[in-house]
Image (cartoon, rainbow, N blue to C red; front, side, top):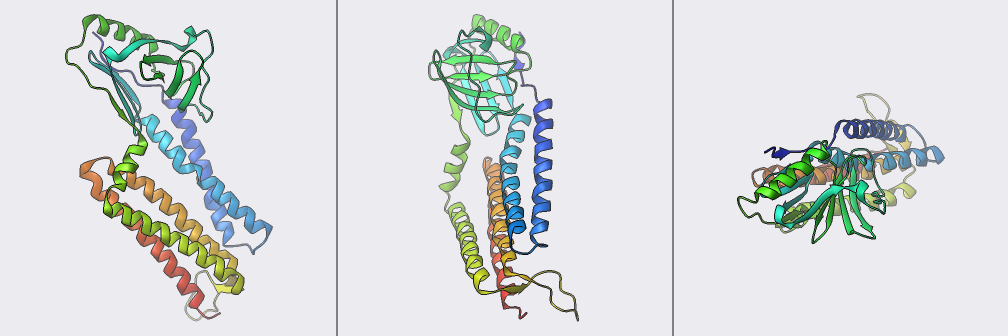
Length: 302
């Protein structure tokens, strides 16, 4: 009996996600560099918005690419395990009512709103099936996995092979009764929040970033010029408009969000939770250093 892994098609989705991440990263870097070279005005605001808009989707796309890279559908005589990033659904075969192609539906299956090749993820409602959860990569290879709780939509590279294997496994019967298991990405956040150390690091980093934003917004109107840029011994201080101080809270916030997500990745495993605390602690220290940098800049006479 062919029991095992039936992964989704990954190559096209990973290529598209990688291209988007690289393009957005280049735009974000160029925009941040331009922030240090222009005076306050329309060009400065455009560069700031471009930096924020281009950087914000990068963690989201990176997680989607990671999820696709590790996505898998594993079928044996006891259960069907669907793994998609931090989302895990382990379904006993006895709970599965049917597995069939989405092409068999009389009413077309609506696809998720936010979709990319390699990332058909999300919840939709179907007039006949009710709640439908997509954990799929290719809209041309969709299979419906119906349970009493919900219908799952998957897209194995070999849909016919998975369907035939499921039929044979059902005929042969289960060797060991399996238990249903559902794990969502939000579970990791909830679990980490229960740790007092994690709460302290998260909240401290948040308040440092909020304080940096408020402080920079108070300094900019009252201080026209600040010393910002590489300073050499014996050379005159390079003066720039104080509006460029907004770079510090923006960079601190974006890096803190990236560190928070990276820490959640490590926190999933008991043996690697120390790494999660190190990453979160580094994010807190980095935010503090940004705050001290602003203090040093505004106390430097110009």
